[in-house]
Image 1 (tube, rainbow, N blue to C red):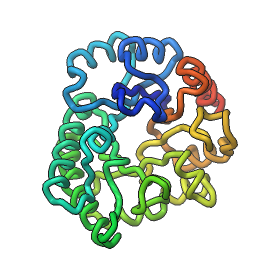
Image 2: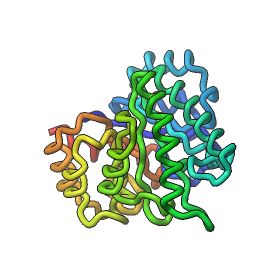
Image 3: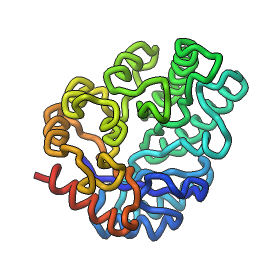
Image 4: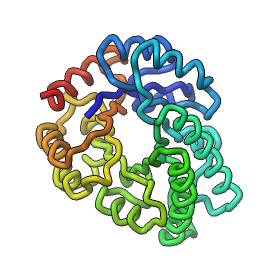
Length: 271
């Protein structure tokens, strides 16, 4: 397993759960100094950060790009894969496709979280899931062509009414035509929705392609009540080899949150 920390470069989501903010170079330098293996980026668009600049910074600081978030498509443009308007769904697929191409330059998958949307009033959940499946099938094929996976994230019930648990997520991605979609196990969402985080991880097994490392209150691990010993044991038992990425609030500030995160990562995963 490899350590990762999040960097957000979108001012409109300043209250969100990302450790570092705004200054890409300074954030990457701090991540490298602490010993992180990689960074996960949340940008406003696929061209918000020139690929050659990001490549140079990654090389300078010895960091990998673990994944790229797509949530700006919803936050800034109101795009989701389950909007009743087919034109908006098409724009959502295009936005995610561009983000996928950007990430694939670095071997990094794109994450679909908030852009999955909801079954809105007047639309049956079955129909919304059909639209979601259609979008993921299209995007999964493009991910395969680019040599990366596509990461789908079950969210808690307060953020989506579609898929909230890993078990449901496994059934859903197994129903897709594409085999290039994997699940994101976000420990914060799981603390709300899962009966047992460890058993859910064991059950999902190889379907898990990314982990978001945040405590029960969305603060860095060690600042809430998540039973991390059990979670770490389960991830080792399924032979998870991906990133453990801190998508947590910068509490009490970014530097202390990053230090707490890497300390916790080493506590649970370096032995």
